[in-house]
Image (cartoon, rainbow, N blue to C red; front, side, top):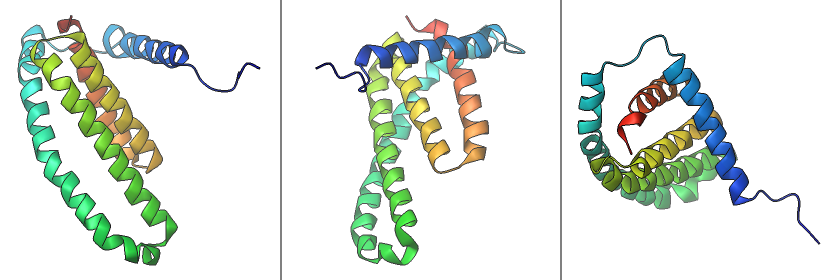
Length: 158
C-alpha cells in the first residue's frame, strides 16, 4: 500500500525552491532599490564574523535556558500550559537556529552557496517562530529586512 499522505523529501526541496524563486523575484528583481555593490561586498566580508560571534554568544544563553528550564519546570503550572509550551518552543527554535547558523559559518567564509543556504534556512526558522509566538513586529520588520539583505547578497555566493 502506498502512503500518499506523508510528504517526501523531494517535495520539501521543491517547495523551498519555489519559495526561494518567489522571494528572489520580489526582493531582488522587483525591489525598489538594490544595495550598492560596495556595500554588498562589505556585508559578505563581515557576515561570517557576525554569524560566528552570534553563535558563540548564543551558546551560554542555551546553557542558561536549560538550567532555568530545570529550575522553572516544577513551577510551570503556575503560568499555565501555554506558558510552558511557548517556553519549550522558543528553546527548540533557538537550538535549531543556532545549529543552522553554526553550519553556515564555514560556507560563509568560503563564500559558498551552502553557507548562504544555511543562513536562509535559519531565517525561515525565525519566520516560523515569529508566526507561532505571534511576534508580528519581528516577523514584519526583522524577517523582511533580513531576507531582503540575504537575497541582495545571494549572487556573491557560488
